[in-house]
Length: 239
Image (tube, rainbow, N blue to C red; front, side):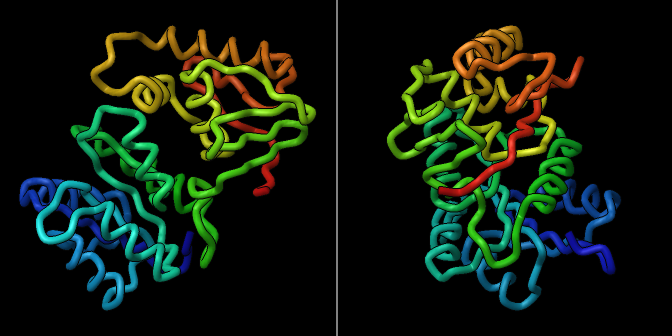
C-alpha cells in the first residue's frame, strides 16, 4: 500500500446511486476516488488515472466486470480488483476469483466492509504479480491445497474434506493473515441466501482442525480470534 500519497481507488458501477453514495464514503475513509460506468470505461481509466485498486460491479452494460478482469489479466495487468456481485452461488463467485479478481463482495453490503476488503487486498497484493486467488496449488508446511483437482493433502497423503470444509479452507488460505469474520465465511461458503447460522462455520472449522490434526490452543494453520472469526496464519508457498 502506498503511504506517501492517498491510495487511488477506481470505482466502476452502472448504478448512479452506488457511485453517488459510495464515492464520498471512500473519500471520507481516506482514499482518492475516480469513477467509471462500465468495463470499457474501467479499462480506459486504468490507463489514464493509474489507480492503485479497482472496485467494479459485475453486471454492467457494454462490458461486464468479469470480462474486464479477464482482459486485464490476459494483458498481464495485475492491478488489485474487488468485484461487486449479486450472485448467491458460491461456485459462481469462485470462478470470478479464479479468473483474476482479488476478492468480491455481495450486494447489498456494508460500506465499512468494503473499506476493510480494500485495505486487506492492498496489504497482500504484490506489484506486478498475479493474486494468490489465481494460484492452482498452494502449500503451507505439510499442507497442500490443489484447487484445480479440489483435493487437499497432509504429509503428501490425501485428506478427505466435505465440499463446504474445502471451500472454507480455500478461502482462508487465499486470504492469509487476514481476520475473516464468521459472517464473511458464511457468505463465502454458503451464500447470502442460504438458511444457516454462524454455528455452521464453527462446525466446519472443527472438522478442518480434526482432519488437519490441529491443536486449537497452539494452531499451525487456523487461529481463532475470540468473538470475531478466524485467521490463516501458516506461511504460504505457491507451488
